Each structure stands twice: as structure tokens, then as C-alpha cells.
Length: 342
Image (cartoon, rainbow, N blue to C red; front, side, top):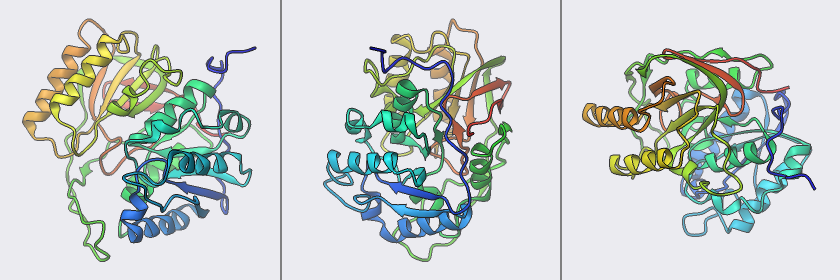
């Protein structure tokens, strides 16, 4: 019997998203829609308007059981219902959380392999992105979620929207633009009439180690990726352009240091094609300097390029990056070399 966890030699691409296609919005982790129903509903409407799709909401997506959107079996049932529905062409995460790893042994990987779909989300979605890549060789999309990005009161940020459209277009996304500004102001998601958030000049991307590297993208949130260490669902990091980003609340520099050293000590930073780290939200100049020093130390002895301040994950505006697609990191430029859909 073939090993179901052996990586295929070719990437598994989902079909391109078409106008009037059905998409499913799910909550595999946190109960955000139950906490912020108006913001969630606005995000679903914005998703439909921006992409011209028909958005459906998973049966348990609006539920709450403690901090989760229902039991693990309920959340897995929603995910598998979307994976096995031939009408559904894309799956969008409502928001992240902490408990998506509970679903990994319940996911219908064979259904996804037989009928791949666009899957988009970030943060705790990392575990599903990485598992589908490890098990199926699947291309998935590390990008905006419904509540935080699509649910902005005046619609998704145009830069964020354009990046998503380029990522799921039938052609390779090419060189990814640098965002000249950043939006870091928090707003109350219960406020039905907030004002537009302030835009500020963004810190430019910074090359901690110059150079050029090429390989398939592997994108994730650092503490979420570490949940897969030693499991069947952890992808092989070797040869990849690794893109890591950090949570924006409740995650200290001390924890970041522990997690980065765990990656190094596990050998996961040894044979990379390159490393890019996301723009940390609300970090002070001193914290950014600490992070740069950490990255320099944990990659010491390697010659691949290292870049910080990439517009990915817990930041706005945000890039959409396709996991498993060949890309090149040269200086501070990231270029996607292959199409991510068929």
C-alpha cells in the first residue's frame, strides 16, 4: 500500500475561481462569528460583492462552545461537508484561533485530493495549509480571513484584494508589490459605524542577509506551525522558501525566541532556500531590533537570504501567498514563478 503521506512529485492545483461559483465560509477554530455577528455578516457580503461569488456559511460556523465554534466533530463535519461538495469551489476561514489542530485526524484528505479547492486563511489556518501540503501536495492560500480583512466596514483594503486576485489568477502572480503603508489601529468589531482606520507609512522590507533563493513557498504562523512538529502532518521544510509570521496579541518576544530556537534545534532551518518573516504588528523599534537579532542568531551558519517586514499574516494590508508554488526571494523582492490554480 502506498504511503498516503508521501509528497507527490507535482503540486495539486485547485481550479480557478469563477463568477457565480459557490464558496463556503467556515470556522474551524475560534468562535469569531458568534462574538461579532455583524462584522462577520458584513465580511460575507463583501466577499460576494468583491469576487462575484455565492457565499454559503457552514452549519456550525456561527456557533460557540467555550472559545471554539462548536465541538471538534462539528467543526470537522463542516470542513468535510465543504470538501465533498462538488459545487463548492473555495473555502474561506472566518478567522483564526488556537484549536484547528484538533481536526487533523478527521479531515477527508482523499476527498480533497480528488477535488481540490481554493482554501484561504491565516494564523491557525497554518495547520490545515501544512497538513494538506504534507498529505496531498496541495496548493492552498495564506491570505485574508472574513472577519478581519473582508469584514472591514468599508470593504477589504484594495491592496489586499488585488493581492488575493493575483494569487488566484490563472497566471503566475509575478513580483509581489511592496506596500508603502500599514494600518495598525485596532477598532471595536462590535461598532456598527466605525471610521476608517488610520494609515501610516510602513517600514520597508529589510534584508538581514542578502542573497537569492528559490523554492516552493511554505507559509505559516510560527506557533501554529510548531504544533505539527513530530506529527504525520508536518511538511518537509528542506528546499523551501519559508515564510513565517507572528501573532499580534498575547505573544511575547520571549515566546518568539523560544519558538525560533525550537525551529533551529529541530533542524527545520538547516536546508532552506530562504527565510522571510512577516511584518510584526505594533512592535516598537526596540522589539523589531530584538527580532532581527534573534533571526540573525537562529540562522547563523547558513547562507540563504533572510528578509523581514514582509506584508503577510497579522498585518494590514496583507499579501496572499500560495503554499507549494515555486517562488524566488532576491534581496527584498519576492516573486511567484508559477500559477497557483488550473
